[in-house]
Length: 171
Image: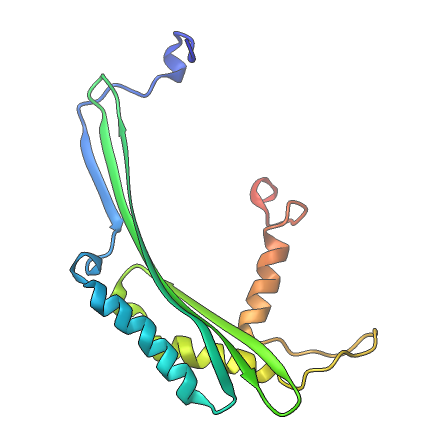
């Protein structure tokens, strides 16, 4: 016996049948494999066309995931939830006469129609091109300006750490 005979541990009795689908795509079931392949190929094409210094696109990826969760018991309870996610990303290489750098951009959405292959390709290319010619600097204090992406990532790292005043039970 895994759970003691204590009503406090039981999933409640109910004749309610309810489905939650607020996170389910409304177009993913109608997208063909050919459309998915075309999106990945368009990412590659757009990346290569963005700048002649983009020399390789080893990964132009599309993926989708569908989930269904059900909770049911012998007392009549039945609840379910369906959700889905699709994403695409580009990982690529830029090179000039003296340097090579990599770049990446990832976009995840609920609906296939919201993926933007041109944006994915261009932002991955910009990421790589901005790194060309980068050099190490001496340790010290410097004024800096972060991109919105970098600033949100850095802030997220601080907020999600256990010692943060913004973390879980500290709020």
